[in-house]
Image (cartoon, rainbow, N blue to C red; front, side, top):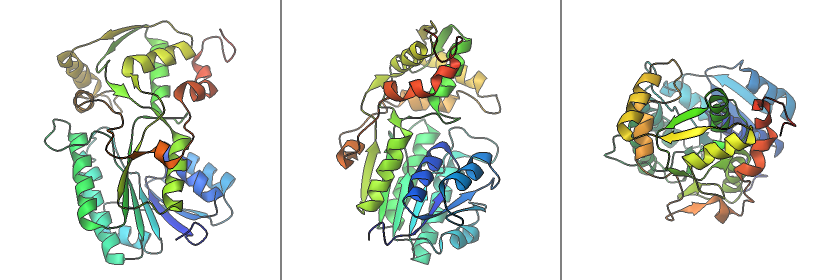
Length: 319
């Protein structure tokens, strides 16, 4: 099945930072893309729809993703379904189990029943495992197992942390933090990541569709392995601040997560500390990566100067 033939794609989680990048690229390729969202009048989505597509090419629908009947109606005319739904912390009824596991169970069951979806592409996470203290990682692991049980034609994508300038991009979050606080107590300071550019993620998804890569798990990692401390130092250098980074032990990190986790949209939670403790967020060597897909990877040092300059006190040209 070639891109010229496949015309209709539906996305869950398409309103987010990564989702919009994928939609932008697929729309430019001529796909009809349908996005499921809770907020059909989201400014970023409406701007995307008006600037990168022909009339009717991008369709935005408000649905309850936890309603199986609404999910079935949403996917019924699509040949490819992409799931990017995910949360980093639990809030109210939005638990990891409900969002990551139960939803995937309902979605894959609907795909199995409807039979029109020929390829399911699912965004999971590196480091997922069972019997872990991290509810985030365990819920992602169970979702992967459900997919493998319910479907034959799937691709599981496991990204490291993503950068590229979105509102919730971790580099923006860290830049804001270190511009305000000269001393940074840091949990998981030595944990290693392979930051991946959001544009490379979109290109990877395009390649997966184009080459019909199915029944595989692909790790979306960048071209450089960096510790959390090194990442913060790169960001600090870019925004021209001088920060003291103090690695803190696990117990203190959990205390920090307990306090910060009380905020409506916390920067850190206990479960996130447990996720950091579970190990490095880099390629395992067991699966294909973006490099195997022949993507020309863009590094964090090259991309972040394009947008982090706004955190410099002296402006874009400050030294």
